[in-house]
Amino acid sequence: MFVVDASIALAWLLDRSDPDEIAIANQAMRYVELHGAEIPALWFFEVANGLLIAERRQQVTQQDTAAFLADLAQIPIEVDPSSRSVDLADLISMGRIHNLTAYDATYLELALRRSATLATFDRKLAAAARAAGVAVFGDPT
Image (cartoon, rainbow, N blue to C red):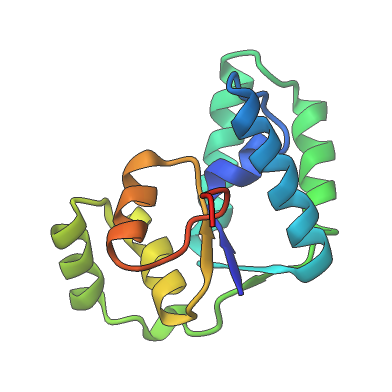
């Protein structure tokens, strides 16, 4: 099982400055294309927001965004069917314990619940995942 956050998905379009991160993003894309991934429902909104910000910064055009969204629609990414039943008090608690936003705690909760590897470039989320015993994609094994 594989959980991919918005930072990884956006790296499939937006250039990263670190060559290691570029390699990790490309590896994550290949993994998702072959095996699929699971995401929380908020992933779509985070990706959309990242694309809007990239357009405003003139990193991408509206045409780039449209093409990227069409490509994303072809990738085997599934919304976690249990998202609606996640206990919000537990999610808030997880955010408190790991000093995460509720948004980031959502990715951690999903990875924990599904015993999944988490793919993220968010350093704080990656550190929280490691502390919680979740494998982080790209870490040495």
